[in-house]
Image (cartoon, rainbow, N blue to C red; front, side, top):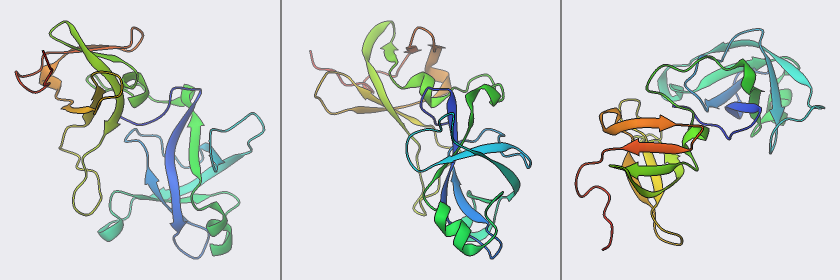
Length: 193
């Protein structure tokens, strides 16, 4: 599963800080899709999404560091040749056109296809998926083997309920109909009578 709002643009990373002397940047990947390719056109924005006038940059090089920055990515973008250049880009988001996304593997979905969908438990509407949470360890890095959590609003103005996105519980996901059908274990979704 990967994260992005439904639009013609897809956020792939958030630039964190300068990393190196030649304009490299440490970034937090916002997707686990294979989208980081040297020579790819990317678009940077501080807030919102790119527009038709947003200039393209090239992803000149990238690598995945080890050690304390494991799970992040180091990017070298065109136009960023020094520490000062890189510092000017800190905090920006890196986008690609949604039309260039690779096909998803079976049993995976875009976050944008789940948020706003109705969650059905054994055929009964249980609530609306308002967010997806990704479990993290004590070091703040995402736990790859832990299931994502659907944040479900069961009624307006109530606290949300977290439901693990366990593949064995999923009956179907229909992105067009905005419906996620699951067979949840008894008692997992506490409802009042």
